[in-house]
Length: 105
Image (cartoon, helix red, strand yellow):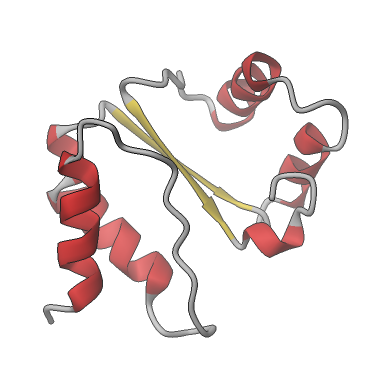
């Protein structure tokens, strides 16, 4: 099923000056589903890795953001936790259920 969010995600991924994207909406409307589906279609051509950090199912990820907010340290710890190399140019870093991790917001 086509949804408007798909075209917005497609435009975002093509933007050369891509900035972090926040997807907001009511619970259970398909935000995560849309990102995952776009990951299968749009994002594979752009990113070598997709790392999904779900703060609800992996509450231990919250602790990474409870110290300082040094991006290099955060990326290193997330890489170790999820067993994937995270590089700014080649990795889509998807924070799901981020409201569970106040420090990450």
